[in-house]
Image (cartoon, rainbow, N blue to C red; front, side):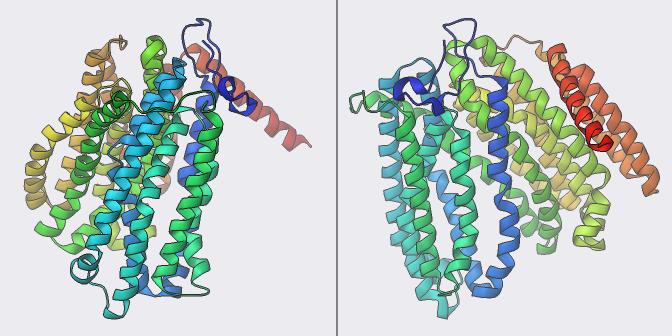
Length: 532
């Protein structure tokens, strides 16, 4: 079956899927997924350098206290996204499935239902924030007296922007289901950059928080309008009847309910480590732990960029192409492993000099082992995101949520004792051990609950664990070499071996041939450049 986005709207620009020999099955080309992954990566990455440059000017321009409040506003915008109750991702899943089956009427019903739910949630949460604003400003947060009034006004304006923020999540989820990642990121990149640029522009005329937040909300509204325009463009609304069905609401709320629990509990479990460190040890220890932790977890940008694209494809394949579902799962795991292994390897080997140059001698002394331990957990967790997304796409978000709920009390107890007796190294140890155990359990659950997963789980599990553990231990061993020059030579040699083994062991003959062609093209291009 050809899934042709131009079919309902007769627009060539919407054509993103490819045909498959079996006309009853949907198929997404590897080229399409690769392009969309690059779009996603750029969407996440490009705003970062703008923020790095803009923040010092903002602090200088509006002052430290106002910037502190602005940072809370930014945090709240991100946090309130959790109040979509998983509806955005749920919409992505079901729209992907229905679109693959050409059930356009049901797509429309689901989109309308998700929009109503998100709008309702946004209004409720916005009203709640407005009602609590006075208490938050005067009692919960220690706002300087001269900033209380403008902070209160800024929070009132922020409450208006919450429905807009949640509707953005829903519209983006629909476009993700349609594989329109180019459009999504062409909107997302300037929108994210505007988060930093708007305050810079406003402060030329006013340093008050109220107009800054008002313009940020206006920017979000423009983002929503662009997303809605493209939803209207790519969905076949004109030929269908607008009607509300109870089943659409039920489907969204049941699936999204499990996601919302996971979305709330998982960040809570992720942030408890720094809370324990602050409560049991010292605030300085929190700093020594958080700096390398935040640095290493930024690597999740790579698997997240890929899996943001893969999730709607998983959802589409789950209904009519189980063979492709299984193959995509296998390839996503090995591609993430091939990309992440050398990056993590290098960061473990050079953890000490990186921290020394970046943060100084004391950080290098206190945080090197923490950074190396967290790196191991990041590598495990990166590949765990594949079966995690596969289970959700297959319609079993409850499995992962139940696992997290079971993990939570056990993890918190062990975290307490290891932090108390071994300090931040103990915290890093249990964080990474949890990630390793969680990864293995999620793989077992995915392979047992998804019928199309027909690979040898025991063999694959042993290979994956052996690959990661060996890579981490060898990298740690090299980090102990006292001579930097010798350490670098050995690291290059081991990395060369990792690249070779990745090529011959993880890639099949077709993938090897594609890599060889790319390398030949690069070599030819370099030769022409040198000989000219």
